Amino acid sequence: MYFDVLCHVFLKPPEHLMLRDIWNIGPGELSDEGSRALEIIDSGKLKDIDLRNVAVWTSFAIQEFQDLQAMPLPKSGKFFNVNYMFFESLSALRESILTGLNGQLHASFAVLRSSCELLTFHYWWKDHLQFADSYDPFYDWLFGSQKGPRFSKVIDDTFRKIDLPPLCTNKETFLSVYGKLCSYAHKPLITEAITTMRGGNIPVVSHELLYFWLDLLERAQRAMLDLAICRSPQALFPVDLNRKFGFNPPIGVLFDKYSFISVERALGPEALNSYRAHFQCRTPPRDILDWYESQPDITAEQILASWSDETPLGNEDLPFDERVSGGNALLKAKVRASQRAFAYMHDSPSIEGPAASSLGQR
Image (cartoon, rainbow, N blue to C red; front, side, top):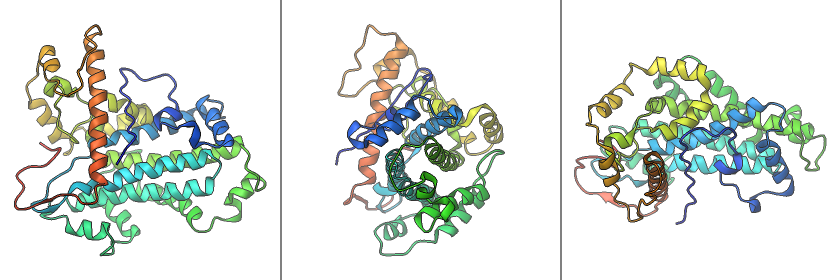
């Protein structure tokens, strides 16, 4: 199975991040109207440039949580597909953006609702499987042999267990955004109908309608990002993985400075400072960060010597930081591709007997 994995590693934030680039949108995926809509967004011509910037950075930040998807091992049974819903949520989010750009806003919001559901279910199941000896209940639900909980119960469970910082999306806000998306999966009010807002059934690029779509997309994405942060608050405290582990970092445990850039830009300084103050002394992430700090530092020479990929690191004429960032980009792309392949593997292997450790955890 082929996966198109996009991996940006910035040494510093770009002044203008392009929606086309972060979702790797090809020209064949957009209609003429879609290309014009994307040009309006990526050129910054939308009436609210702040909304545009936050929506694009938040879209990017959600993707970066691929790097915090560990694969814990049960004592027995299958486990490779445990992150399937996270990657399916990303796929649905990308599809929602493509259909929205192409002017199919009703379809876009319906798929965006699915993306929210998939991400919420992902974290709900990860919580329920955290100390499980077997993932059989998850697989029974995944393959349809057993019914799962109602989504209303999943929402209740999720917000009862997560530790919400000030300014974070709470249950009421989540339900408000989700309810708006549900209108387009069921019955929008006449005043909510896309045809009504467009003023007819002819597909045209409307700045007002594009703004309406981007606003609801940003609100839904923010709810998804906040959920991901609350379940993996170490994302708020980036570390220099190379300084401790070279090019052999633990998978799915820590956030590096490259992934943090998008989270920082998506949240903005006020929310970021609030979230960090809230989680600073809590566990997690304190236990994970303390473990990181307990590891010995290694030298620049040891970092470069730790490169073991079959593709040579090369670029000997470049500064150390640029060589390291290039290597990190290559390794991130390969790890993310492997994670996706595992998630979608139909006949995944099983563990027979006790598991002594976990893939992607210390």
